[in-house]
Image 1 (tube, one colour):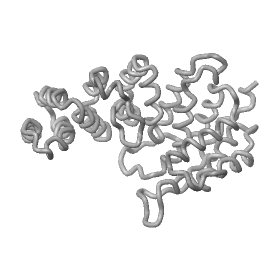
Image 2 (image 1 turned 90 degrees about the horizontal axis):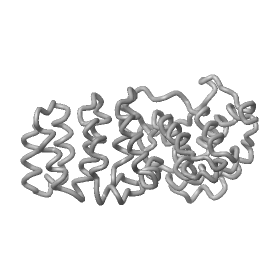
Image 3 (image 1 turned 90 degrees about the vertical axis):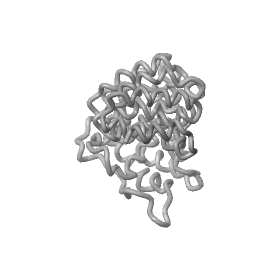
Image 4 (image 1 turned 30 degrees about the vertical axis):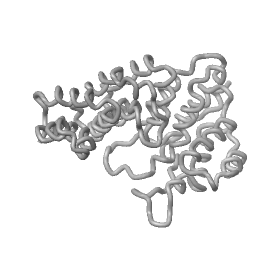
Length: 290
């Protein structure tokens, strides 16, 4: 049985590739998923899944890798992982979760090391909605659990998009629950993953047309104790302002009543772009939120 082929490793046996805090001169983001990252990925998976053919995985991982940019490399490595892990998605994703290094503790100075988990993110994004790849069983719960754990090491904002597009009500209900999670990385995902115009990511057309289903999540997080989370809320409102300026202005006007210093920062940050465009109401709200 699958369960008998998996081992729980000591955390010290898992590896992460070296990564800078920011991109250095002469390097690019795609370098974060290069030879060392692939070697670490093969090592970590093999520690929890002895049947894993690391040699074959690395050969396929390096094949056609060079011209690919960072996001393309994430999808490529996810596909190669799918070919080398058990056929049933639930079993495959469980192996990936067992291979994760410990969760992040800080929410500042995170650096670029988390990009190592981009293949894990795209594994869920690309395969986590397909019941046919999970012996006909709905893989939603396995995928939600995976995204919960991955976002504590990197961010599952890219993989959350397909779920919000395909199953918006069910996914929003889960994110609403996670707004009360003790981990700020999880709380941030609730806002960041649902941003209608998240940079680099697939847009969410339904939320661009009507962002009101997501407003309860922003309400729950607007006074979050962690700036890491509040910054995402501000950026999310800024996204809304691009398509529904009046809604964003009304939201910030309401939030201004009894606002703490932290919430005032959210308002100022959320309206910075319409304010730069000289929109009087945005400029006035930013001034009132000082």
